[in-house]
Image 1 (cartoon, helix red, strand yellow):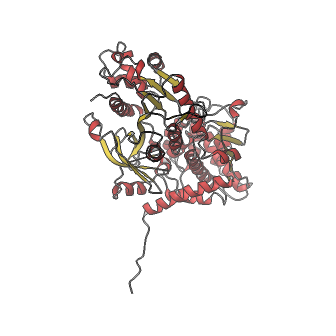
Image 2 (tube, rainbow, N blue to C red):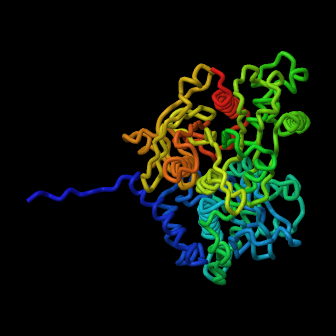
Image 3 (cartoon, rainbow, N blue to C red):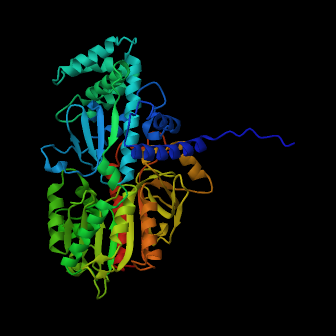
Length: 563
């Protein structure tokens, strides 16, 4: 008889299973309507996250509190959420018409409303990925809060350590601390967190806001306080999903409003029957690539184009940016700020109104039927499917008349994590693989690595993986994708969803040209396989400017038929 091999699961398999468990559990909790993250109902979510141990959450599975991961998450959640016992995820339910002031996290476009001392409402208008994002972030901070509780609670009666008493005293006096007070409190807080004084000092300022310079201490205090109350008074934190959100999700309600609005603007400007090129990018690179060098040539004499783009990207450069925008609007650009709740702004460029001599593309050949370029801001995860799917549908001009859009190309430029190389490098995908399901979308990419080489930036080509959330990735899983026959070069959150929508519109529903051209290119925001190079290590700064504009210019050269 054959001996049964002792099958041991690898870390990559465990991680893959944990991602699947997270995905299924979050959908189940959403259908249920509410759960208590640190109670029995949140146990599976906590266990899956601790089993996965994503890179972005650093020391989540250790006793000491994770600081970089905490900063990353706090920047993506509304100010004050750490004080709230009740977090209610809602659809767009009219709070913008109330006295409540919208709180928008610094690094995530989502409207949040502080209802009272205990409740925060978070508007979800960007689909399921938004829910996965916020639930994993909340699970992480709640796990960290219980680590704080474990280090400050002496016994079950509620007696706490001296360090905690001193932190509470500093926070509750509600005034800006002097340097001496601040350093004394940091010393106590470092003990509570299991971190050194210098580690806390290094990250302290990154948490600060103008209203709350000592916000780091407030965040730690409230996380610990609510965790203590959960254990001593059994006051469990609760996350609820509003009935309207549960009813609307998955029905493309915001995407449909958004896409119809764009088509109505095209109709009003007699652009509906022209060739259309859709570009998913940011709201500056296409406009600047076409107009900036002409508008600013006297201001930045003898400087390179990339120098000008860097100047435009600086945070205080409002005057020069406004100059370029004003010129673009006089030469065929129409801005459509979002009013649908998708948080995706749009620009439309009518190339018939561009004076090519006053542009960066004097040799553009656009033919008699001048194309129209629709530039849409970045979508978020599954929202990419909702928006492109709706945009590629025919426009219902009247009750009896449908107008099919003449879409010639769809180009996607985005940020992604790279698995070989570093920040600012470029990736050209040949296929998108959906993490967890293994669904895959090979395509003919109009952009090639050869087109972008020779510009001082490393370029990689190959398949890319579309992940459930960039904050859920760990080294073992990514190493498997990179080293195995999948041969994945990078990870991002939207590619498979974009391609799914393009393929169904062009190959099955026949609402656009079956030979529509697709272009995908990404620049690296981080390398999650390198310690210290994950997203939690900070932004790209000006490193991202050159690859962003290089990709944008290559896309525009193809649209303008410049060889």
